[in-house]
Length: 230
Image 1 (tube, rainbow, N blue to C red):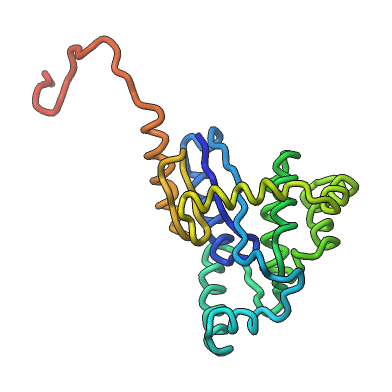
Image 2 (image 1 turned 90 degrees about the horizontal axis):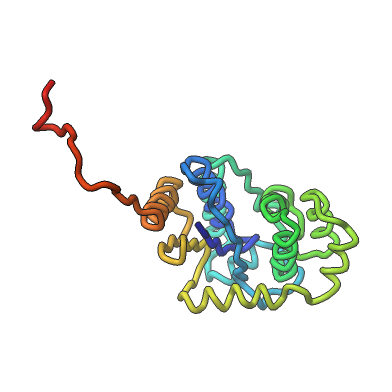
C-alpha cells in the first residue's frame, strides 16, 4: 500500500508529523508492506539561499512582532519535545530548500531516503546546519551513507529539479496549500501534524478496504450469542 508524504525540511510541523506518522507505522500490523514516498513541497520557493535571521524573517513574513514570533517558537518547541524532538530555533539557519529536496530524491534512488530525511530534519532543527548550503548538504548526505563524489556531482547539476516540480505540481492538483500533507493509497488525505492515532486509523481503514475478506463456503453451522448448546 502506498503512502505519499509531502513536507519541507524547514517546516516545524512536518518534523513533528513525520515522527507521529512513524509511530503509527510502527504500530500498524502491516507496516512492513507500506511504501512511503516522500514528496517535495517548498514553503517559500523564492527564498534566497541564505535566509538571514529566522525570527526577523518570520516576523516580516507573518506580520507579527518579534515577541509574538518568539512565543510561537517556544510553544512549538514544547510540543516537539513531547514527541522526543529537540528544536533550537535560536541557531536555525533558514534558506532555500530546493537543493535539499533534490538530495532527497537522489537518496530515494539510492535506497537511503529514510536515513537522509531524518538527518536533514535534525541538522536544521537541532544542530543549526544551513540546509541550503551545498557543502553542508554533502556532510549530511555522508552521514546518511550517500557517496560523496556522486552527491557532489548531483548537486552541481540540476538533476531531480523536475522531480521536485512534479511533486509540487501534484500537490497543487490536490489543492494542497500547506504541509505536512499525507495521502494514503490515493484515497485518504491527512492534513497537518495529526496524532499518531489519526495516522494509524487511516492506515488501517485504507488497508481493510484494499484487502477485503472473502467468505468461502457460505454460512455453516456456528455458535452465536443467542444460539449455542453450552
